[in-house]
Structure formats: C-alpha cells, structure tokens
Amino acid sequence: MKKLLTHIRPHLDDICAFWLLKRYLPEAQDAEIGFVATNAKGGDAHDDEDTACVGVGRGKYDEHKGDVNDCSTTLVWKDILTKVQIDPSERMAVQKIVDWAFLEDTGRLGAEARRSFAVPAIIEGYFDGHDRDSFAVTQFGFTLLDAVVTAQRNEVKIENAWAARKEFVSRYGRAVAVIGDARGLDSYAYNRGFDLIAIMDGSGRYHTYRANANTDIDLTPTRDLLAKIDPTAEWYFHHSKKMLICGGDHSPNTPISKLTFDQFVEAIT
Image (cartoon, rainbow, N blue to C red; front, side, top):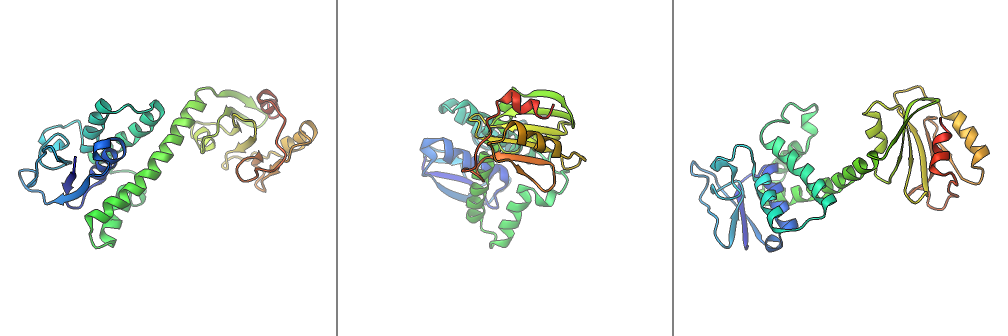
C-alpha cells in the first residue's frame, strides 16, 4: 500500500481511519497521504493495489457507498481486525475510540455540552488557523489520537480495577476501595455516587484516600489515626482536608505505608 487518500478538509472520522491504518496495518505504515476533492461520484479516486481510499471513491473504506451503520473509521477497524492480532487490552482501548468516532461522524454527539471544546472543534480550529492545510490538520489529528489512545488504555485499567472493588459504608459516607494504578479512579468513583475512595496500587508503594470535593468530608480523624497505626509512613494531608496521600510518583522517596489492603480500608470504616 503506497498511498492513502481522503477528501480535502478531512473530518475526525477520516483522520482516525488514517491513524488506524498507519498504526496497526504494517503495509500502510509508510504510505503517503493525499487529498482529493469530492463530487457526486465520491471524488476522482478509486482503490487499487497501491492505493486505499478513505471516505472517498465509494470503495472498501468509504461508507458513502451505502454502509449506513458504519463510517470510514469502523470500516478500517473491522478490516484491521481480520488481518492483525491485537492485544485484548489494546483492542478494548481502540474500540472506545472507534465507537466515539462513529458517534461523532453520525451526528450523535452534536448536542454535547461545551461542544466548542470537543476534539472535532479543536481539529476544525486547527485547520482554519493553519492555512486550511489538510495535511497539517491530519498530522495534528494523529498527535491528538496518540494522546487519546493512551487515555483510553487508562480507562481500560480503571474498568479492570473497578471490577474487583470493595464497596462499604465508611465513617464519612458511602465509600469504595480499589487496588490499581490507573489515573482518574477517584472521578470514576464520584460519578457513581461514592463520597470517598481509598486507592492502593498493586505494589503497595502508593496509598491515598480521596473525598469528593462537593462533600463536607474532613479526613482529619483518619490522619490522626494513621499517625498511631502507621507511624513510620509519611502521609501528606492536603490543605482541603479531603486527601491523604502516601508515596506515588510525586514523592518516590518518602517512607511508604505498611498497611495491608484490609488495614487500609479499616482505617476509614
């Protein structure tokens, strides 16, 4: 595959399809990117042994030929999955992006709150602010999607950790405890109605209690208790009184907690 073609001023859908092809299909990795004008026939482009058309040409990766339940991203992804073995966790992360691109392309996300801050609006802004350059906006889109897939890998980690969660009623309200190192576990818990989350990573080198900022929780009693039951650890008590943190990336050299997971949970029960 020597060339990938789509229409001038590519949408998120087309950029994402290109990104998938170049990232996961070996024969497309070094393919040149090109752009054509559209017309009633789908543009002056067609698939051949050297060229793959995305969103144009009415070919394999162009949903405009009548694939009402697909978009160019979903068509590309389905084809990749028949050709390449992808790690299950990676596949789950990418599937989230594919589903998002489909919803966007079919107008399902058009009524989102703060729409002007969404990725499609950012892509449009970049295009308009960079001489309406289709190649430049595609490269920018690749950079955004590289970040998005990293974030979605983290979402998969959250979901895996959440599946083994421990729910309980703490002295502060409804609480949940989780073992995992995914970012954003606290927000995930708050969005599901929990007032407080206790997070411990799998290595035991990071412990944290985090209370929803919209509550009146004050973790001072737990801070005082930790001073007695975990005296050799260095616990940071945030000035909001809603976070207690021991260890982690920000403080790799601090004395870590000796609490087991059960003891860690018991400290707020």
